[in-house]
Amino acid sequence: MTKSRQSGYYKAVRRVSSLISNTDKELHEILDGIVRSTARALTASASLLLLDSERKNLIHVSSWGLPKSFILKGILDPGKSLKEVETSKPVIISDVTSDDRVQYPETVNKSGIRSVMAVPILIDGKPAGSIRVYTREVYEFTNQDLNFVSTIANLTSMAIDNHILRDMTVQIRREADRVVNPSALSYARPAVFAHPSEKEFSQILDFYDIEWIYEPRSFPISWENDRITEMFTPDFYLPGLDLFIELTTMKQSLVTIKNRKVRRLQELHPDINITLLYKKDYDRLLAKFGYGPLAESRGRGVAKVLYSSAEIQNRVKELANQISAEYQGHNPVMVGVLRGVFCFMADLVRQITIPVVVDFMTISYFRSGTSSKAHVTKDINLSVEGKPVILVEDIVDTGLTLNYIIRHLKEKGVSDLAVCALFDKKARRIANVPLRYRGFTIPDEFIIGYGLDFKEEYRNLPFVGILGKNSESSLSRSGNEKNSK
Ligand code: IMP
Image (cartoon, rainbow, N blue to C red; front, side):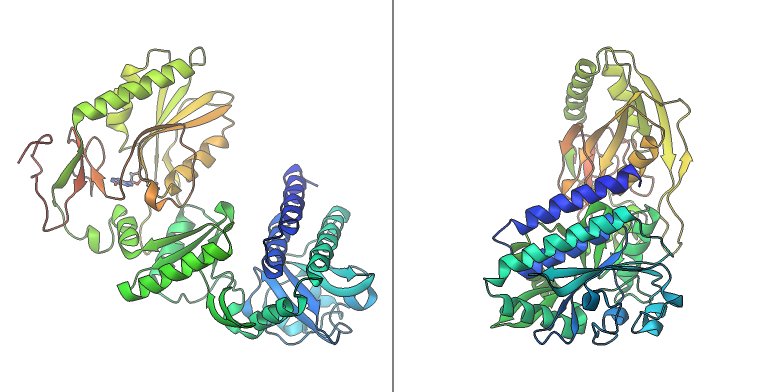
């Protein structure tokens, strides 16, 4: 077993144990957490099934990464489906296409599932349900995999046991409600997105090699007695960043509703990370790549000066002093990401008082409508293996570029990687990248000058300003510092 898989199991068991001991959590939240942690540790899909009160049917209570058609395939008979519940013994099937223990072979086949492991959940020594793990490639489950899922199954029975004394019936009825409601179920990658902006966003994620799942699951967010009256299905889940994303590229009235749903979800599941991207954020994201309504016009000028040249120079000097003190005796390699960084890098290295070496790299940018992947168009020339590297960036916005570059540099075996960014536009961060050195935290605005461009213009401004919208440019392009007209 690889070290990373082993540590994935350890983390999952730790997460599940702490979930179970959290008495504030509802049973359905705990079961969801268990299924999600199991699936992620095995990089597979997973589900949790419980016997109904008459012990005749197996009900899908929670699932992760399974297509809707798979979960809706029909009621499962514990005597026909895998039989792990009937026999109280784990079942492993390496290739479902050639095994008659599968109750709905056609649906399973269509879902692209190839291997299954099913481990019964016992309560008071009697079978109560099962945890199932599914892979899309033929996979030989190992003894360690089995031990891990058996541990999870034991923890699950503890969780259910703990809650039996609390309102178990209510909980199970809520879970059953989720199963009946088709919108409550997980989806795999869709052939069709509900909105073109979702498709475009998925292409941006693909470009930066960020794994995503479209509408992976629905959360019940309000109930009337035991009946679920409202569900919320975030648009995307990014497993690598453990982040849900909801896009709102629509009318203000609908944005308000979405806002309320997101807030409600956060109240019910404070451990879940979710980001709401508004239309303006989304337009800005596209404009950065030269697309969408914000990118249509040129030469819109500077609406407001944000930092004067003197303010920038003072802050750059402070950063350089900090780096000089902290890297004394370490001779770091300073890597700049072209082209926006050229002014900052030139000023920064000239203020640093310890020996450093300097290199640059460039990466390709997203182009709407193509399905290309980000790639390094100019790599660094120096060897960085075993050396400390300071990655110097002009601005971090979504963090997707930095996330990609960090992964690229880490593959080169650097001994330590720090990021120094002049501007941190925190508001719409998607990839949470660690910044060791930060010049300024700025508002959620598109900025230009001191190397930063809008469609290649404005890089030569000595100050940094907010790009004007068509009608509001108060400074002309040739305007100088703060007091210019
Ligand atoms: P991220 O991947 O969204 O963090 O964006 C990083 C890159 O987008 C930066 O290196 C810049 O080239 C560009 N960028 C992001 N925000 C701005 C801005 O406000 N002005 C100019 N360029 C920006």
